Image 1 (cartoon, helix red, strand yellow):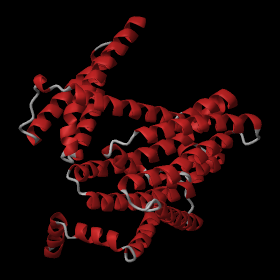
Image 2: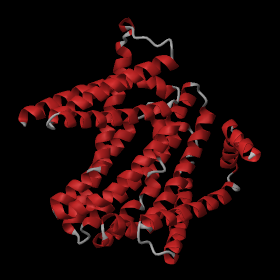
Image 3: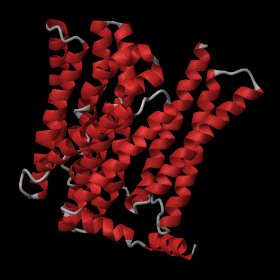
Length: 397
């Protein structure tokens, strides 16, 4: 077993190293805003790794080393695909070691160090709470809290995927010195993120009891208030995700990293104080994270980004009213539907969520009439060639 574990670690490490190499060539796809290809290759990597593991386990006795073999083979497959598409999209791409310049390595290394520090601070925000729960409240409570964290993580991942769409566009505008276009784009992205995530979170929190009951069993329904309490701060904290691309584009990651690290330790200290010297229990840990993270994302991040863009410091903070309005609206709409429908399974849960989304989208459309900038964007989308073709086909039918 120890030998298998060694080979699993070694092969996985080699596969990870290949992924780092692949990341260098993947920047070509990122710079050309081909996120569709990047996401497709990620899917291929996951599927190929799974299929290789199933194949190896089926032809021989399952061993840990086979997982390592699957990791390295999947990494090789995805590296070759990345090289192919990078060369296809940017035909003049070639490797020349004589062009190696230490000056750029130093510049990139300095940025990488501060990004790493930022990630350490983020870990103190997002991952330390489960450790504190386990340490002070026991493994049983940690297991229950882990159930709630699944939804928190799911919503965060969804927000990251949405914000990743705008990041290449921001980089392109910055590289071409199109400052006004960049400001306009990031404001639109901020508003859409605020509205979209607030609608989703409003639905999930309104249905939290039913979701837990159907998913985990009726005995877990009592966790709905903990779920509600942990998700509500996200309506503010997820809106700022598009702003992080501005900090990266301007290479101004030092101050955000220091602030994140300091506040991360503040979160750790406050969580321990609240769980150890108050009667709040697990709610104290959630409260600590909500307070500290919201302070960073509602005050520092939007104001610092506005400073970088040289626009009024409150240019983004005013949009938090949109988050609050659409959250309350979505929560209210979903709650009204739950009073008319008895949710006894996944089908009824899905039906209520669809109805709530449709009504929330109608409300969003009404808001568009008062936001000329967003209204013009959606009009351009409706006039897109692909949508026009669909309209023509529909009329012919």
